[in-house]
Image 1 (cartoon, protein in one colour):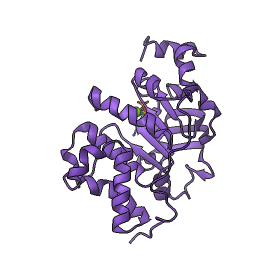
Image 2: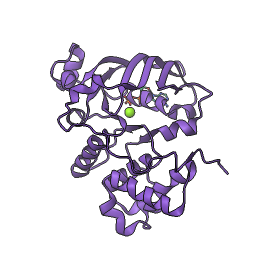
Image 3: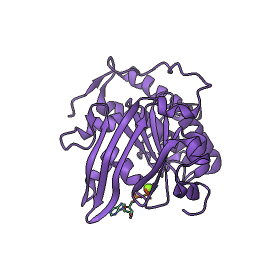
Image 4: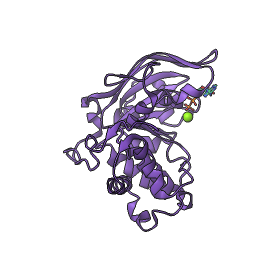
Length: 282
Ligand SMILES: Nc1ncnc2c1ncn2[C@@H]1O[C@H](COP(=O)(O)OP(=O)(O)O)[C@@H](O)[C@H]1O
Ligand SMILES: [Mg+2]
């Protein structure tokens, strides 16, 4: 039996939205404190070096987009942040990645706790083969001590926050796999936020969705940035432009350029970035 690590008293389940002005512009990314600080992170799969000395600050409560052609290392970097590479034989890294005082890459770091603080949403929605309710209740049951009614409130809060409550409230005990792809992805986002993470990692979260669901998830990402630090990997330039504050462009395992999204898309500092964002390659 796992010891609960967080009690409901310590955990805010209905946090008030941050007082953030709606006029706030994406360019303010640089003004926000860093949630994750990456320094000289290099990474290998066996002999193959997938990342070369990446240094990057991910601003708090902003959306950072990772863009770049397939195979440039976006997912590899994202997976180090919540240690999803640990299970890949031959995967190793050097350098540092910190979430506040937490050393994300240290062997001694409690990975279960780390994954409560840094959640991940994958390309293909992957609800558990359980009910809608049980999908969201799963994490809180593992990590928190809460009563039945607190759990119900928390599930409702997370589903509302993930903008899917109205569509599922009358069938909470129906199988999650019966939902549409877009609803499943929002359910997975609800499942990720139910444990109170600080950071949400999203690896191409819309690429398996139809255009209408994509827009719903993009709106949600933009909304969630008021409370969470979000990193989204995307192949879709319009998506990066629409929903991110900061954009990092990677090429062949190197970080070519990072800056406010508008600047990266309209006045990139590097020719390579310009060629990519204008569709000359990729
Ligand atoms: N499990 C793995 N084993 C070996 N090589 C891998 C593995 N995963 C990714 N790679 C390689 O690492 C490089 C970066 O991959 P990845 O991070 O998935 O790129 P991206 O997400 O930008 O498409 C690619 O050359 C890819 O083939
Ligand atoms: Mg990838």
